[in-house]
Length: 381
Image (cartoon, rainbow, N blue to C red):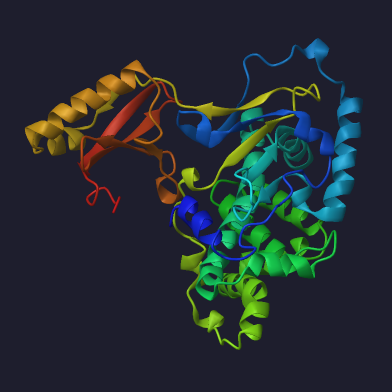
């Protein structure tokens, strides 16, 4: 994936390639008065999850169930009318301002955890993280769709996103994109949810308006899902291609690759803004979970065997890396949380050109170093 900063720079050379885009949420406007955290600006490594703050409000200061239910009923109506994007939203990097990315209010996480998983026997933290990931994965697709169509936009030299937006009246949206965004979310949630939880999420999808609720066939048929990806791009670039009399073989392009549907995404590519409106609404505070110091790293036999074959400079670098991890939180530029099949594993730079793989054991009681080698050997080409 090309750095978004370079893409935004290239879009500046396209007339209306960058244009003002509202950063306000589509509903529940008071949320914007709440404080927010940009995950990319914290200077530490985000684990990709949330946890209940240890400094959350005492129970006697929190809203009672009836007051919370009144807030959630507002969101029931909003979701039924405008879909999941009533709970979180994506601001395109086509935005003229620098404030773009995914915005997720914590009140929405509370709402989804309550509406979908209140009867689930899992812990509160698990429920909150399932709810958070539903929102994150849906909005993540909008970012990937933005990226994919921009490749064609820059090729044509025409503001495809801007021109498509001009076709819509207030309240209208691209139905095929919302269907595929929900399907993409379901495919992602399938990897971290039980069958019962997926059934609940599917019921939530079906309760949404046209487009959003049409995701199930795309979720259940991967060939149809890939066709949907091409239809999303066709919607963005069709008008421009027609006006330019250009025939683009969109249906023949491998859009799964262009959308990075199977590739891990470094969240440094897309800003994620956590909106802390839960405390303002007197709900338990949810905060992003960041890694702290790692004082206890235990090396496996496999690790030690590979380590013994390294040149002395890399052996020394590993010793220095361990000392740094023990002294301070990991540097996000050097310490990466892997995703997909490698979810739960972290990669740390060891000197120049080498990496080590680690994973937390017993809920971060200690860490296990089990692999070390060059970038290529570790799958970091």
